[in-house]
Image (cartoon, rainbow, N blue to C red; front, side):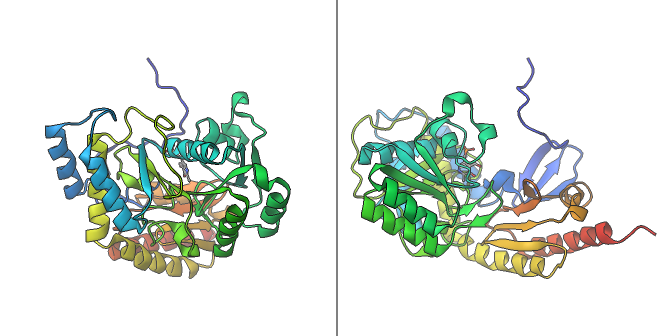
Length: 383
Ligand SMILES: Cc1ncc(COP(=O)(O)O)c(C=O)c1O
């Protein structure tokens, strides 16, 4: 049997990983500033995370949600404490798309309405509703087409107000990434998020904060939406939540009351996933990783800003993007193959940095040296 060939693949096989480093089968070491797409939050194979999972594996790995699972309660308590959303309610699932799917469905259940507002360049996942609110028709099959989604320009307060003025009583939810990831690291304006909050309040709609990529401390705050100083009704989380163990969830404001069977999943919130997610929160807290994300993120942005060939350096904490002009189109490739540094990209010309929140200053410095070298080589005419 062949693999279903849906992923463009880099010709490298990673066999070992530790902290911000990975190694291929030839023993070559790479600096990982991509984190397997923003997933590695506390560092590869963090010893506490490994121990927590191993110990849990020896006890029980899985049982369904038909029994009491105290680890889920511990996780909810810890998440409430670390995120500051102590009065919210936790529903656990398995992936970012599933988190958004559940959030959108819950908003529709709660309001009894069908329309969802989403934004240009959004990415919310590949399942049916998640892909319907994603602004990329290439990911949608005919069956995903719906009239229930209204796309508006990102960060356009006037368009949002006009939309609510016209459709307000039909809108179940507004879904927005605090910092768009796949769309190219676009930060939602604090004023825009505040107007989402107030329009949702006025019209009885739900504000869904997609924090799948920009959440879990990556921005330097637990949720990047927190910068706006207002709370969402539902936050969705995935990537950094398990540091590579598949676990996702949504947290739900106290005014939204649960009903039996409204949401559900077989694997969501299993014992192993909870152990992994608890280990992540313990390390985020203990190693003060949000503070590190602020500090190292600022250092990286300042240094990148000082390289004139790189344009529009942006982002928050350790979620950073910059535009690469045409003459530097080989930069990402050269960073990987010549400098042995993994970075991410966003089409057509954006490089994204999504490293572990524990990235060390010396590694950030190594990256800056390497990128300067590659930029110089690419911009110096061959003699
Ligand atoms: C903002 C955002 N939401 C949702 C998703 C979907 O997550 P998953 O691939 O785990 O379904 C992603 C994945 O990249 C994402 O970046």
